[in-house]
Length: 169
Image (cartoon, rainbow, N blue to C red):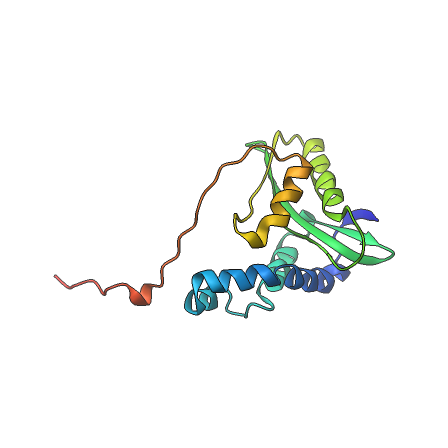
């Protein structure tokens, strides 16, 4: 296995990997939020929405992607960004192919990005993930990588079709 910068020829592989990796997360989100909200948040459909988000990020900021490759095949990807002024680097969407039979993909990706951050003068690294059961593997992977400080938050949603229309004065 090796880490390398994203290349344009990786696009369809990372899109497919994102859709596969977020399958259970999308299922859980739909159950928690209901169809109306889930359809607004993922208008392309649950099966392809994460891949399309990742596609847009790769087309906009390809320099912020790395891939993990094994025998010429993409087995993981990681998106990140850095704020040089604040000294903070953030890991964004990332996924490893759980069915490829290889261990350590995630840790290799995190090490590569954290080393990149450090080489670029970044002082603090952060990553966000869900507190739900569908994100449990991600939380464990980030802890193994050394992320040992956290702040909890919650994001609320409301279907505004159920909100009363304001009264005219």
